[in-house]
Image (tube, rainbow, N blue to C red; front, side):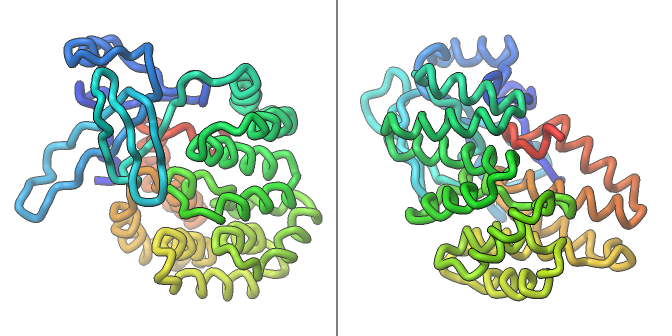
Amino acid sequence: MLFRRTTETKVTPSWTSLSTAPRIGLAILMTLSLMGIQTAWGDKVWLEPMRPTAAQSNWYPQAIQMRVGEIISLDAKQISIRLAGDEKESLFAAHRVIWIEPSQRSEKQTAAIELFDAQKYDESLRGLLDSLKERPPVWRQQWLSMLAAQAAWRSARAAIALELVAQLDRRPLPPLVLAWLPIAWRNDRGTSSGATTEAAQKRLADPAPAVRLVAASWLLSTDQRDRAVQTLKALRSDHARPEIAKLADVVLWRTTLPPEVAEQASRWQEKLDALPMVLQVGPTVLIVEQLSNANQEAAAESLKLSLELTPPHPHPELSR
């Protein structure tokens, strides 16, 4: 099953923007109230359900969990949050963090996010960069920077986007931030201008693996395709950065010729299912495009519909 995403009341999370995400149904609010959680207070964190062990059945979909409290830290390994009404810190694996809705956003942050939602990426970028000057906690700096990198790329400021990715990659990155890297999941992305290609070429050998991943994805649809493929294959073998390696492997699926797609589809499905839910959006978008290009319209439409109905987070690729 591709997306096993249901909440504690079996209502799938649904959102289309950062400012409105997530829209929680009345039944969920009642459940949270019964649990003693004050939903109006604190950072909101959505967690992928624990995957079943070999001894457990995965026939019945498990529930997405929402936690409300104060995020203390978020890194590549775990999130630490002081839950509402609890003095102790609770720890959860970082790969389970699907989405975060920070509380107590400044006016600058709120305005920049609203502009991002409206796809006014140029204006949003300026606001996000100004918000970073407020020196929020490290985890929130990463959250704002991942939005800024997307805004920079989508407003044809490729060099700024890559520099933001380089700054992000100085610390071990949570999977949520990796999921929002400005990777070209579609063949028409990253080729909108010569400036994008030039910026990618300059940083294809960057020390930061995340920068090389993004730059190579942009170059796959250019005359630098061979260099991009070589870079992605090297990243695919990088055991020190397993998440980067998995994403590089997925990006390489874009090089699959249409006659070969049907044969590869089941293998792609298995690899997609093995990814943490938070990392599945970009790869799913890629598979949908590959299936469509190979005239596998029924399979493509099924995947596309599942992603539209149950998106794990409001990734900008879903707004296209």
